[in-house]
Image (cartoon, rainbow, N blue to C red; front, side, top):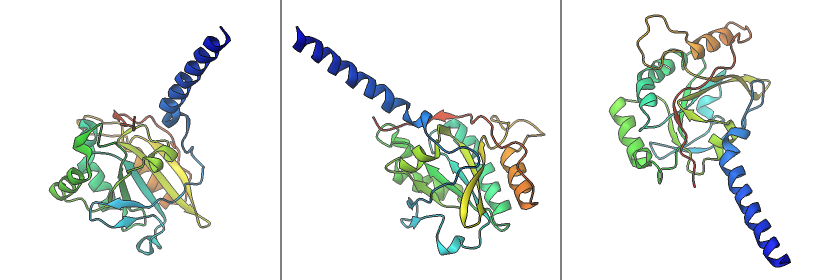
Length: 209
């Protein structure tokens, strides 16, 4: 009887572990004001990219967007992401895109397909694959697209904004509330970000099973 109870308890523990594993991406992640750790991920050109690279030594911060190939929300935002980098890279806030999805669960998000998509769209920014999903996990990314604005502060990268790129998922509004643009403009003006947290809208990240 005792052996049977122990076995049931063991199975229950395994079940709980599975639940906690599935919940991890939602339980962890940066909050506004947190220091963000650097990462080193493979770009579509085959080179490794990090925020600490010499090419970014003069950057004032970064716009980090978790996005992918397959998600219709991400596809709708591709041109807007390109426009963000075009507008802010020269002002000190370059954009870095990261694909957080497990390609075994979503083949359209494989590295080969990332390379094809980047070429088709003419991406002017790094498009990185998070093969271990470690970076996505620590950022706390939940959806694609999910945007973060990081500001350099005394040699550290502080999270200044988390959430949606704007309030127009369907790209149909004449007047959008451009959350990321407003956040970066306020930082460039030396002001605090007035709306530092919004809800990201998009496809759920495909975590490894």
